[in-house]
Amino acid sequence: MSNLQHRSWVSREERGRFWLLASLRDLVDRIAAGSPARLAVISFAAVVTVFSFLLWLPVSSAPGVDTEIEDAVFTATSAVTVTGLTTVPTATNWSFVGQFVILIAMQIGGLGTLTMTSILALAIGRKLGLKSRLITQEALNIGRLGEVGSLLQVILVMSVVIEAVLAAVLTIGFLLVGEPFLTALWHGVFYSVSAFNNGGFTPHSDGLVPYTDAALILLPIALGVFLGSLGFPVVLVLRQTGLRFSRWNLNTKLVVVTTTVLLVVGWALFLAFEWSNPDTLQGRPVTQKVFEGFFHSVMVRSGGFNLVDMNSLEPVTLLMTDALMFAGGGPASVAGGIKVTTLAVVFLAILAEARGDRSVIAFYRSIPEDALRIAISVIMMGATVVLVGCGLLVEISEEPLDRVLFEVISAYATCGLSVGLSGELPPEGKYVLAVIMLVGRIGTTTVAAALALRSRRRLYKYPEERPIIG
Image (cartoon, rainbow, N blue to C red; front, side, top):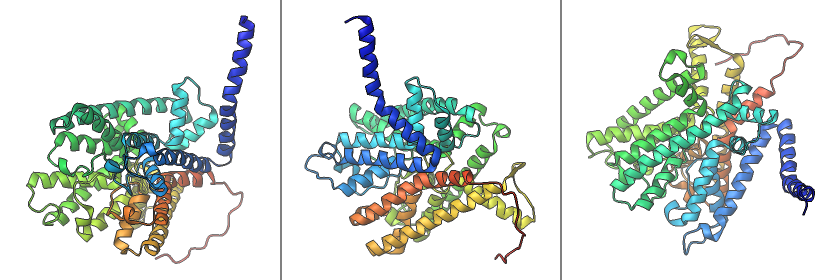
């Protein structure tokens, strides 16, 4: 074959190979041009469908286990949305292949399906087009379009480095508690991905409960969850400026300050409510009580790992946990909930109203009115999702409202803490929770972005009339 014929054959081969990819790209571009929010929903649904099929395959189940389709769908949704709720035990229901599928689903879901697509494009040497940059900018809440490519590269490197360091430390921790090297290595990798992506999945049948004294296991997991919940934009700012508070942008200041306040408040309240509870902290050494209070406060806003049985908590502790889960973590992070910046903006608006200020001020910066409108919309939509979800599950399961409320908020906030209701639900209840997890993962940021895109400038103004408020 001559060189000319070879080039022609290769050209035809390449055209045939990339025709489908080009068609898919054109379809994605058309959807993105019409509605980026719709593209986010479709992409997450498609990824969930793929992983549901993979988990439904017999090779993903442990020997002698026949996984029902609703359990495969629920687990795939929980992994892709990095929630951590389960209807079947991860350690005994899934084979190594199944657990590896869950691991990959958490990694893809943690970075975000659209972000992951852009990272893969950069990894194979392709440049991001304008539409891809716009989509990624919205997914990550990046301020300037020119920062998209560099930030994606930083995200990829940062994720790999943080997860690798966590995996190394966790492997040592599991070796110290007596696990064989290969088992310790697998558990170290699994927990590092699950922690940094706030996944909440655990390959142990008893979770982390047997390791309450293993600092080299619990501390790295808590650190991974905390870093993941801050959000990539915040971690990037911290990486560039260090701990110099004056050089942080407003988003970083709001996230770090609000997160710290919620962490301390949750820590103090957990200790106050559970200190004398015989089913949780009573009888344990003081240092262990203090650490478990800290661990619980870190986990309640998205981590999903627990050291105590959630059914044993005092009712007031469950209510406090509901509130912290609903608040969630930082924007453009792997955490769910309404996001701490949303909570901060609304709190500052209430404070400004109480003081009689005309503007909402934070750290010598004025917050635009449209940011307040979006924050209120996110809270109301989140509350509506929780309300509707609770109504459906109460009707389906006939369980007490407090159990249903905890499970629904955990699903919406993609937290993963559970009172055991998920595994007790009939198939239709599991599908309801799966939809709530999807809404919680893509709803708050995507709907907020969609509302911002719909803003328009009118050429006229109606007369003002003030209704009676309060």
